[in-house]
Image 1 (tube, helix red, strand yellow):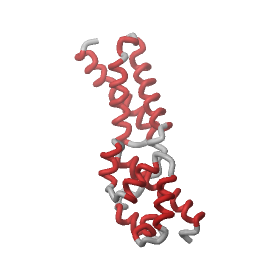
Image 2: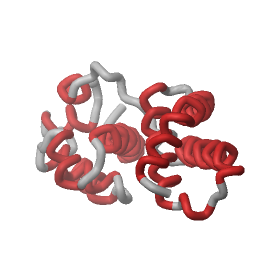
Image 3: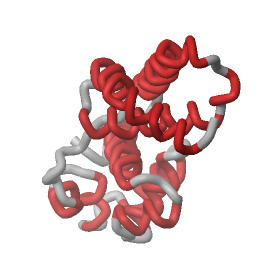
Image 4: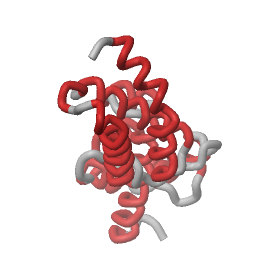
Length: 170
């Protein structure tokens, strides 16, 4: 298939593919991304389909992309509030950061951070001990900013549980 033919196919079916993705994920921007991924995948495998099955084939690709997205760990993340800054997180009462900053239980907290399992240990060491920003951590670990925020959120919860068990927090 020539590039011109492919472009015509995209123009003809872009609304269908987007609609399928949007109906499944219910997120306009993510549906746009998934529709684009569907066409990239279709381009890579265009030689495997006949013109008779093109519409159904594209619909199946779009459906599978959306289903894969819904199953992914990225979609199951815990969303932090968009307007919650790092300083808001640090100011939280009895947070691991607050205890660390006030030197209450520093050794226990440091050990608790080092005992966390991946991926929480790396982000915790970088954030709590090395005092890097979320942006710096995302760049260092080659992860999306939202992934780092989610991992910090979960690491914070795990640290609080550990610290309660150790008797450092009430």
